[in-house]
Image 1: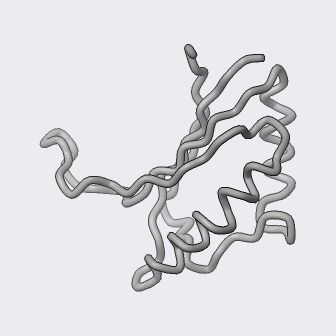
Image 2: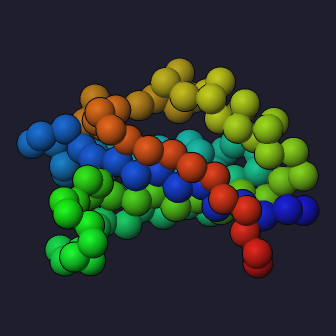
Length: 108
């Protein structure tokens, strides 16, 4: 099977960081791992110091998911169908303002 890395760069809403982290770690990552093709997930906070080329820190968190599938489109369609439903609720602490998502092919 082919391997992929799905990344999500995001921020919590102001004053809701603890709820954002709780939701991501206790609910969202486990919900994502129920999608066929998702094999692992973790949430990483941004380091306090960033490279000087980065003028301002845009995202405070990186969610990193590993996928294994021969049909990436099917996995992404299933993910999108589940988002913001009872199978994968989105916390009010998650800010959609400026969030970013990408999928990369893995060489592993």
